[in-house]
Image 1 (cartoon, helix red, strand yellow):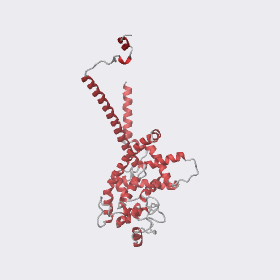
Image 2 (tube, rainbow, N blue to C red):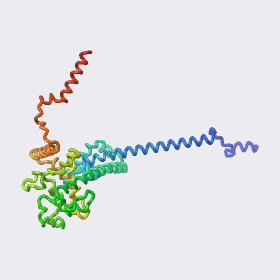
Image 3 (cartoon, rainbow, N blue to C red):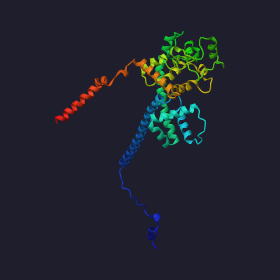
Image 4 (spheres, rainbow, N blue to C red):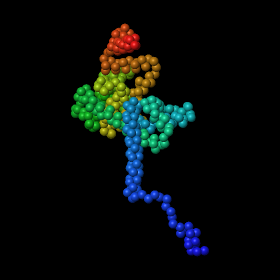
Length: 354
């Protein structure tokens, strides 16, 4: 066998045949640039999608703080609902705070109907990211509300009690029980702030004068005074609430009352511990007492009194409107009804002409 024949039979000695069609270096460079630009565009689209999601979640979070909960973390609401789904013992004891969390979760599902289904579909990492963005919107909404109340609460206390020195909106060192005017407003209605023993006991944090969410503060009552034999009389008729509703709107009144409480107690951390003698955090737990008063009346008579209170607020803010005097004959002569009749007449006339 010849050498040439031997070489032809050896695959390693054969020339490798390329199937590529030769292009210029410039053309290949342009193609690489085009591919990179395409990758960059995809990354931009991904970033834009993430930004849109962030903006959406943040805006939705603002609704949660305004319409569902003021203080509880959204994770607590989700955990409570999950706990109830997994609970097999129907006789298990449920605390009032757990009921509040579950009611808040139900309200959350009404305000954000997509959220419950979304949580069931996404993994834990994506869920945490979504909740983080919702919380950003929640905190932003509460910051806006409390910021609005800073000047209003300070002005109200200064006008009502003329404290010396006057309360400054940004000053946290002269509020709470250290301030005589604020202390009188925050004092539980079962005690009298003017009593030196009461004042000293609260400020010294003695066990005889424990301030907690189990007491209504005096500022929640009309003229800051409660009838101990009928504690419902005058409750929720605070002047500052009417001032705020008149300037900001009627919609958030229960949340506003809780925020007013927090602004009056806006004091150094050492002073705020006076509100934590009992289990939990009084300023947080007080928030639960407010919706419970309206939403969980014990019976028809109490529900009727709640409606009367709401009507009282309406009259105070908007004045008497005498809606009960609007008979059908009167309504038929008013502009809305008259316009509807005129439009129908013109429509009939056009139809008849054709």
